[in-house]
Length: 263
Image (cartoon, rainbow, N blue to C red; front, side, top):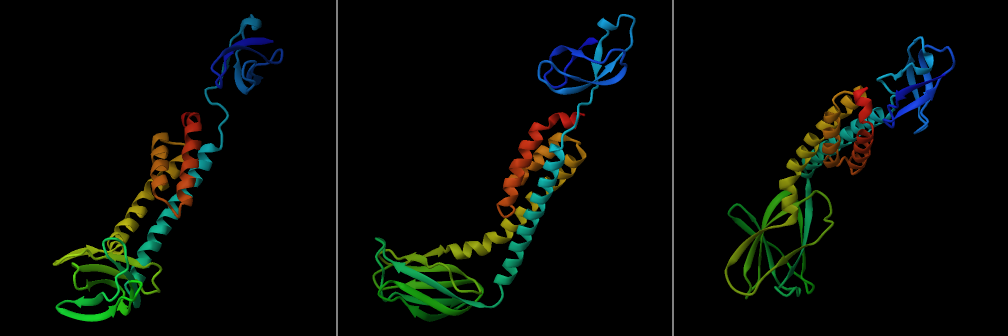
């Protein structure tokens, strides 16, 4: 027998087929979109014209659950990365290391014979001199930030704040001396690392909390907007880059499974 109903998938009013004499909950195929839906057959005297009402709930998908798992994993990766960076900072403040640099003039040409001094409080000690290629290195500096002075006759003296790590330097920072007199201050990239590392680490941990909450709500299929916001925050929590990728995938799944939150 036939009856009219509205397909919950395509939203069209269609005529569907159900077994003759059937009543209660039945399965029927939508002639418009081909999806299988559940319908409630209500008994009436004129069965050919009896309306068939689909259940309000459609068959749920696993997309919110998958999205929730991805967000929780992304959150854990972010928290782990933030904690690792904080630990790295603590480790970086122990031991001693070597600082390497290169001194050039305003045109980028290496300066030979530039003198390098380490300034500790009021104490100033000459520790190195640049070679013919403008390179120098300072050994046995305690890990952390230091101030050095770079000077050469005929050039502006530069006081530079540097950062020293307890391992062999992987870069040689360039220090530029301009022609003239006087002095100027500069903070090297290595020193900036020491300044921003704690803030960066804390920010990653904080940004990892919303995706954790969003993942829990996605698993519960509750408060869709909270889950979506959590996925957006997860993108910026980085989580060794993998966390950002997982959060993007989770966000797409959440946007495609809105009906599951309304079920």
